[in-house]
Length: 285
Ligand code: GLY
Image (cartoon, rainbow, N blue to C red; front, side, top):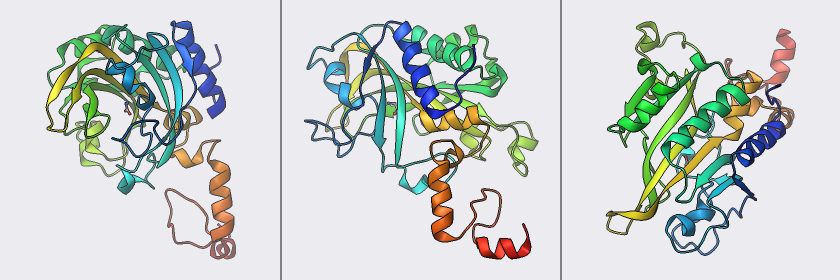
């Protein structure tokens, strides 16, 4: 099987893979959530499915898959680094009271390693602090224990859809680009995704959606145990296309070229961002 390379091929490969696992394909919803006073924008694939998770409406099917256009302002300070965008697309598979951790983890692994042919040694997993079940599931798939990290909520392994609403512990997959020169943890062989040296890229978040947080911060169990996953389309495309930033994927390269023309500056992630294109031409570089 030839793995997808372009962003569009990746979209179709993802949807077809989850349809083959019994999921119904659902179109992306509006960037302005419908009938949801708790959110200004659609920030994740699960937003349009919140009434199903909360038991307020019947889902059209217990397994859903979508590619959701998202707008996020919560991490706006990160935008401009290699991987954070305000507007992006999220690949997602969802279980409304149907499958739970074992299938969510198994399919994420199968998709990454078999469908996309990403080398297993490039993938690290994280689980919520006390989630021994998720830890064991990654182990059973062959992930070595030293590449499965236990992260707390502060380290990103508890996911909230907003200040109120569905939430739950999560488990993430990170891609390892290889040691970052100058990173002490890389040199000491103790580096891991939370160090933040740029070596790792979070590519998929699997949320075990089991609670709903109310206005007082109290977590009440949802009627069913659910799965909500979010994988970064642009990030996985960067991995498949062998580039380090989402701006260099086939989807955004054209935007970058236009920005270079307008600003007369050359984009060079490793170089001096202030070098004018004209200056470069004079220098012959
Ligand atoms: N809903 C999961 C995520 O946005 O990461």
